[in-house]
Image (cartoon, rainbow, N blue to C red; front, top):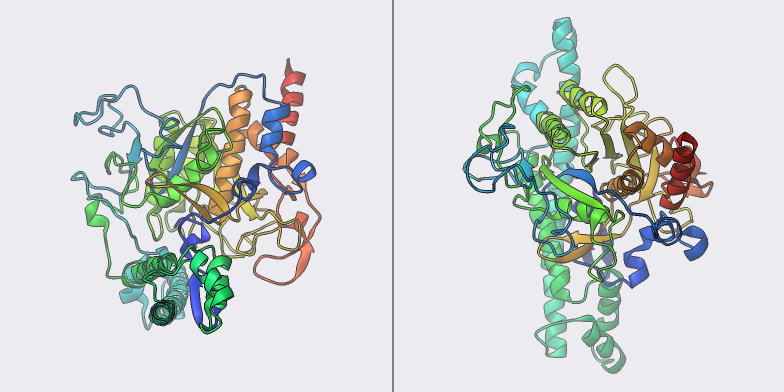
Length: 540
């Protein structure tokens, strides 16, 4: 599933009210909206020094455009900050129903959608992988003792037992969450209505509540409600309820679909899910029914720089290919493998992958696709995950290693950092790992594009991975001779090390930030360009 925390809707309580992270753009100043581009020395912010790199190192150079594939939920192809940089295949004629370039994908002008059917329908929500495993093996193993099974079945039983435990835990937690969300909606609605009546107004916004707090001592709670909305970046109570409604919808989808073994949307696609060699299924709708996550990731990489709209991307000479492979719920290994191969075969030089899950029953197929990308010189950039876990001890898929234990040489795994060089520098949700997470990158409160020409602030390793993909794209565009392995080496070697004592993600234990990843640092475009200059000059 997409590895951003906007889908988690963390609770914030105030005077009996519950609020949830807004999916709308937050009111931030200009610096806050683009903090990831700033420099620690110049701006006091642990960003990637992109502005400094463009200003001091790249101003008089001409880049060669680089193609980056975004494997995600889809991308809004009409967004004002993205439409100019979206890839378009010249060998395919849109809408003629003919596979003009004979690659097995009809009308794939903008990319491809492995979650759609030939009739144009699309999967929006999928089951979780543990739900699928539990449903697949329940009849075979429920009530059985491990020792009574054959050796082959014991291995399957072990996977089933782990998946079942995860599944039951998630079901209990999500049902509790949905109940709490519904109660919060009822409570908040009643509270807001009472305040409207007291102030004789049909709408409550922060300006009105701030004024009431100053001039209406007879209306208790106006100041507290104003503080509540302001702290959570809501302009009005309507926005707060909208966000809560979205949270309820998401949670209900989790209960009724993602955690329901009987739910199976795959007939929409019409493929044989067991046939891992199958290709050509899907449809050309590379936007899909909800392109929020993919559009946000694409904007982080490639949002048009300097156009005074929304947010700037990291890369200034880039084309974005949309490959839809990630629904709400867990992606299927077959789709991930095919998406990687599609991107490689259609010229992608870098692939950004902001998704992950706890189980990967067909990892061998994904491994084979990653080896294929390696053979073709394509760099993979993957989000480390948002569970606050040590990836060295517990895997998050796609993992940093092949099934045989070998490191995936052409993949960079990315953790998330914040704009605060304090104990909060490592995002509290970010996965980490001295052996399996390569580098950290800005991933907290990242402002970027969302569908219908809107913008929003999301957090997650989903946001950190496209920052690194953007850095890789800049390096490749200004130093086209660099290979995928050289790009990875430069990005890791040039990462700025931090020894800040930080809260180990998921805990309150203080550790050296440098112990959380291989590089011990945060990706830095300025230092990466300097190192690329040195290395390429030495070759000449």
